[in-house]
Length: 120
Image (cartoon, rainbow, N blue to C red; front, side, top):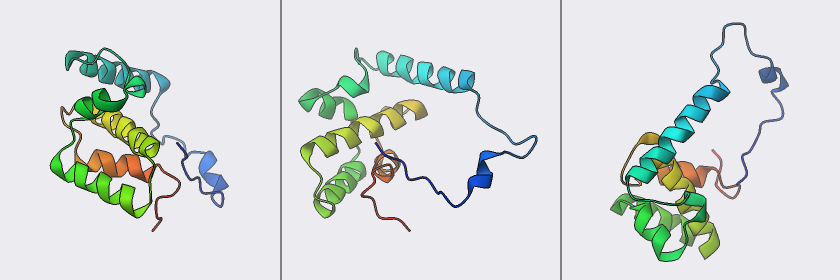
């Protein structure tokens, strides 16, 4: 996964006093909660390890999410590997949100992390 980083705004490295940031402990708690959620829904392995039909079954895409992923795969000529990577990221986003299904917003967010995604 690649995340584009704006190089022009170096001053953003220094936060204003009192600016809110998310602590490592907070992030850790969110990750542990997402993993517990996944376990509670019957997944015994991390999303990163899901493959093939098991990945498709656990991704639980809504109709809109599946349509968006299909359109993106076609438009950007995504390989099967790229589609699976996007599914895993989208499922993780859904887990972090505590959602049983992977909705359009999670797929859109996962696609936004791809370096091939169009920028506005």
